[in-house]
Length: 461
Image (spheres, rainbow, N blue to C red):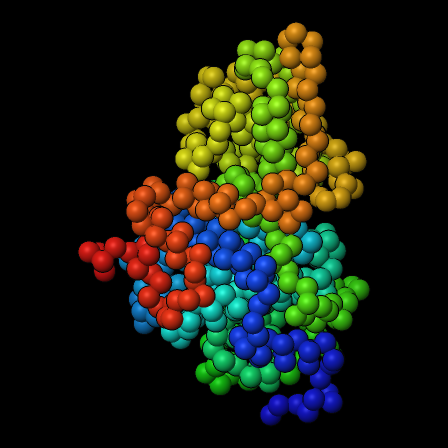
């Protein structure tokens, strides 16, 4: 039995009403354009993930499950149940450090929300416009749940902020596409709460498999499971965010329930979400940005360099300091950029280059300096790079707003160039271009179940 509205908190009423009506609301042009960028960026991450170990394992796992072929596994000919397709695509999207991130809520929304929305959009034969609106909705709720919990406190308690917010974002995106009404949305949110979990130790996973599951696969799968169960008739608690033993009090010492619905329809969180310029860990982006600026502004050769000091926020420095994965190791990435004068998806994932004598020679010149001052700087994740040349000159640049962040967003052309670099290898140049072009006009697609043709050739279908 559904509780009377008088027993449901104001934030929950506002939130559930908004989710239930989201697909009927037109998006501002700037929001729709940003959503296209994030959809392309995440699809490109999925395609590139098919060649990485977490992606291959996810594909193999889902292929062995069988079940109704409701949705595609991106970059492959495989079709699976919506739940399993969301799992695989979530792991593909975070198979490495390519996907987007939302710093204020400490989430990676794209790798959870977009796989969930794509799976249900295919199952329901939804239009591209409905898919686009569901994606934007997912980003909004993913962030707001973590805001209500307090993302910094949540992380300090070792909870996985990425999988918690991601589960709710994935769930509402899927639920909107399934046409759930406000009462069903409230039950959906309760099922999301029951499944929201994760321990932040997943960032210590040196092979990125558990991390891909925790950031992308698990929240995408759990969100789709919650939505499809409620669509099937499952019922639950009418307000999981208030009352006795509620979700917010279980996870936060000082929750702020009003933030669940604050600014809905006025403040779109996708506009505050970062797209990575390089397919490397977020903490390394600012250092690479600063080095790129110095290389462009001053002519010098590798042989001219006497020393390099890289200042990063203390927490960021811990993550990237001589990390075992090449796309996370900041010393290696800085040396690689100086050696090659550019970074590609292939080069930053090439483990052999970590033993390249030319790269190692530059790497020995690099000192990483953890900075408490940069921990407090806003916007976050700034970097200072200092280069001392053998002739005595000192070059310094401080990156405050990294290219691709909400404070310094990439253009459509830059996002598409990154996507093509990620997809040319797995798909071939022609199909990669076709997928980029399809994402430019995705809202005009009449049936998202046909979208897979952009990564599966007609000959192989």
